[in-house]
Length: 133
Image (cartoon, rainbow, N blue to C red; front, side, top):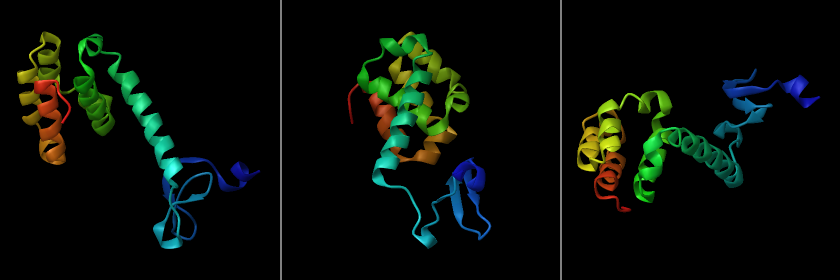
């Protein structure tokens, strides 16, 4: 009944009163005390990590990477999505060759690096060194 009455929308929208809502009439507008609980935030994050990991596992070279480098790939997929990640052709080619120095430099030579700032510095260092930062 609630789905019929409220609808089921998979993106944020403004309800009839102009308040931000999502899903089945879920108020997320801060002005009215809406939002997500910590449990809901972590649930969404876990799903996003699973999706990003599944996307990463489609690359045959992913399994050859150590844990910090795998985390870099998952983080990038999480941040930009698979279509944009695939545009990092020179980085991907360098990873396939095991040239992590070149891969890290290709990461930094991008619009993405400018957009994410310190995150790019940290992830490119992890890619180059294979060590957690």
